[in-house]
Length: 137
Image (cartoon, rainbow, N blue to C red; front, side, top):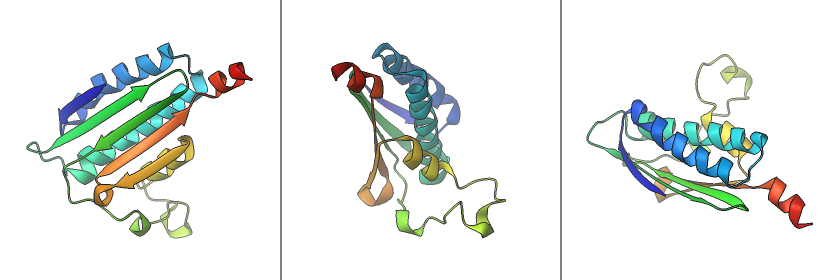
């Protein structure tokens, strides 16, 4: 599945629905589906808001590959990028009361693998289907 959307939060809903419907159809558990939902939502918000700065001329590119064994999602923006090491730790005491800054932590917590490339403009997330692994045993 491949999508290109404008830097507009309203356009992310249809992509999320199509990807999540495919994840559910592939036999992922409700817990795993929730993990993918949260991570995908955060990646899209980050790309639109922080990467592209809500610039209507910039696009967000999304690719999803879903099999019964795993889901792989790539979200790429057209912004300047970022350095993952420079993102403040949202669990640090001085950041606990801030209303934002937890998206990357959520993605890295819920997904099995999260990789950044293209100077932080591209995030690749992988979630394995634990119910498929149990059936194979």
